Amino acid sequence: MGLFAFAAGGWSIWSDRQFAENGVQATGTVVSFEQRRVKRSNSRGYRTMYRPVVTFDGQDGAEYRFVGQAGSSSPAYAIGERVNVIYDPWSPDDAIIDDFGSRQKAPLIFLGVGLIVGGIGAVLVYFFLRRQRLNAQLKASGMLVYAQYVDCERNRRTKVNGRSPYVVSVQGTHPTTGQSTTFESPPIWINLSAVLKGKTVPVRIDPSNPKHYFVDLSQWISEDKLA
Image 1 (cartoon, one colour):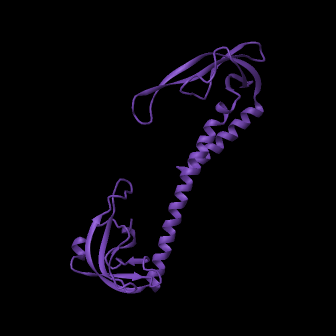
Image 2: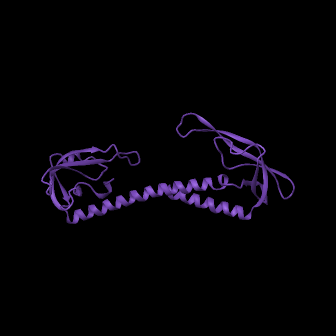
Image 3: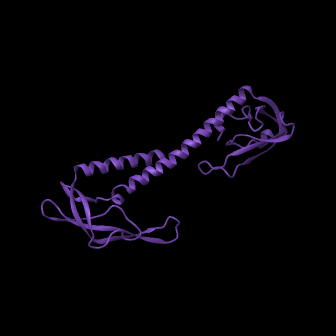
């Protein structure tokens, strides 16, 4: 979604520039407003959006009329106000108001959404890859201890495509701190309660950092069952 929004914003800016370079400038007049009722984002009723209706004279001397692209919750112009217009000389009805709100607002919104969503996605990917790398290191060289199975429950705080994955909890003595510690597995898509009941589960631990560990369920599930 972030990439799509960013691409849409870039395309809008390029398209606007092309239109401005190939279009003809004129002076128009705001003659009325087109009103539309749209549903509020919080679903509490409706609001009225106003889009200016503008007339201008083309190179052929004929009068043309168009509706501005940008809408607002209150009229952004006064009736009779003069505005700069750019229009397609081959199709004068295809015209825009030459100001920031009409030309740059939508592209900037797309670019902003793209940057925000893309940034969030990049952060999530970074932490996912970092966790995968840490798990691989722990599986290869972490200190091995065995912990007693406690439970396998859904993590209701996390949802992927509307589903909540399971998390296996095991309890054992941490070799670094000497304390009884509960270790949680990575999220998985199957319930291992019946399989793990009464069993001990291997845990790989980083002795230099007690918070780094990996509950190894590889003997019971394949990697495609990891969430």
